Image (cartoon, rainbow over all chains, first blue to last red; front, side):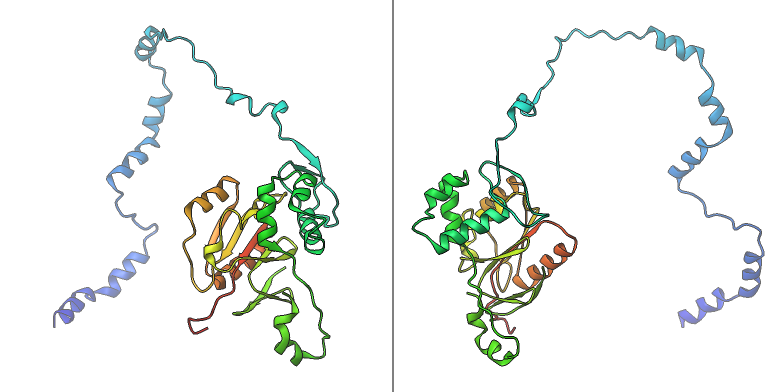
Length: 179
Length: 119
């Protein structure tokens, strides 16, 4: 009921009003928000002129201003010399490498390259008596604690290869493929 | 190197079937000797921290669902400059592949889901 009444008003003379609206050269913009109007005023020529004109009164006032500082001079922070070249971290040459992009020539002490990590883990797996944690720590300049956790948690996979054509065998045995 | 699939046993990574939790490093896979998310600690993340060139982001898949890790562990990793992303394994695999595709220095530690949630 109410909808029908509003529709009647909305559609009243709608074609004429639409025609009048689209025949306008330029659509009348909706009124701006109060704050936006201030911005628009800044672009007007009077304001621009006012801004560019030199005001002698203000200039004189500005000339009277003189700032004096009585605080003791502040010491410049130097970051504790951490960025000086003499404090650079110690580096060592890496043992070997064959992954071109991942090859790094020098490694900070206490770190290892990927290739070294794989090598040392594999060595330990194959010959745990020779490659003890102590030896690895000494060889690669690592902390013994880190080596121990490395050896405890990261183990190279044993790779088993299955012939490609026996697909069924792979699905039933794939648990044995890599352990 | 992308993760092509996961199951309750393990993962398929670039055509290789891997059983059990695994640590995926740039161009290599290692067995990760953790039983559950409770074993993820400062020690069990040691390799990720030690590597040079440094890993940018580490994706951890905690199994069936996201688990809360020890805040100190996460803080220590952050101090080493490694961003850590903890997710359930299914999402972690996807995140890893996505980051890999962006050619980032990404590593992952993944625990296979147990599949008790109707997987």
